[in-house]
Length: 493
Length: 60
Image 1 (cartoon, rainbow over the protein chains, first blue to last red):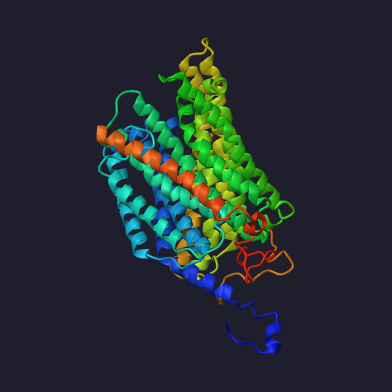
Image 2 (image 1 turned 45 degrees about the vertical axis):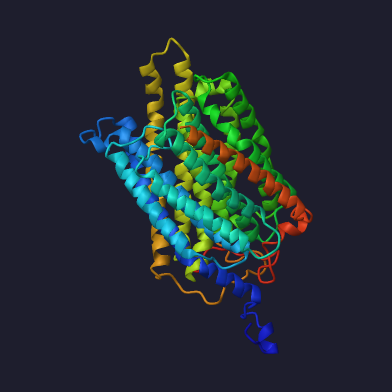
């Protein structure tokens, strides 16, 4: 601690310079290289994934576009988009946020960063090899597991390194309470390598027979959402919302209940993707019941986040982190409640095989997870680089471009999907007519892709300025002076 | 094939068992004894309850 004279201690220009702030700065600094490495590569894959998604979307209205070369056909671009954004962007940004949160919540500087750096390298090679493999025609044609068999072991090594690291960090944590975010993160880091290995053994390396493959496929694909992305997104929200507004979460009891009920119910959910498929009725029924039971973890999280925010909603005006995180948390509630209804067989009959499902997937992975990751990055990166974000206006552009883009995308997919489903349910309407109904909505979805890509470019520029040290320098061990009087730097939305 | 299935069932039992063990540990360790205090563990002297820690960059 720096010695202060009696007078200077009272001077408002001197920020509190306590042991706690030095410890926190040291912990943050220890995570710098691995976390920025994961963030940087995640943003690279986000741009690649957005572009692949954009071209795939416009192929729905312009089928003849880019159909001369095999690798630019829809059947290759679309799985390349999915795998790039899932493994390239979402997983990597989630790992980056998870590493930083683990170090802060264990209250020790990050150890074994070489293990994490090698994980990042393996992981990037795995995604690159896998996506090029898909474009070259080696896709496995199993949704969410299209990456060819020669790429998946590389990814598995990366994930296993991170799982081992999580165990070591947890073991060396400073004694004290294990915060709810850490339960979520630790669970996610252990669950995912297990899910990934099981699915790969049963589907790629030693394929099991017949329709049982479908069961494994959707057990895996749904668990990637529920036991990998959801816990990381919620861990981030459970840390960021209280930290930013300076208020403990409303009910800690509910947060613990939410964690354990998620762990109990989520892994049963996958079979609801197979309603009407060639499976024993009890499998589907058990899954539908578990899907509806998800009401408990979802509503506990929703109540908790809302009640914590209550009376502090003006903070959305002055905190970029909070704005993105709360957008994500609200979308989590919507996506989960919508998913519950979609698991009910009578409604599933209408929405299955329509664009409605695609809208649901983007509500979950973009409006919830991706927005939560943007929010976390706005908090974390300044604390790693010691710089402020270059431009408040650019942050606002980023937010409004992606918020408008994703709302337009899911809105058009939902409306188009319902019309498509109703038309296909009516035997008097031809299949071609049902597709004509949905075409204008696909145009809108294509336009939303441009908005999202533009937002991502703005964010990439902001991130590059931070990493290339072109941003403005901030002094002191922690960034952002502790605001006094509740409303720091209030400015136009 | 049989070895693969055994490995998977082993993993299944291990994972479920570890979840139960984790829950048992959290109760025994007293993690659930002081829930109000637990919610405040992410705050400290430097960033106490009541202090906001994020804002838009100043200027521009």
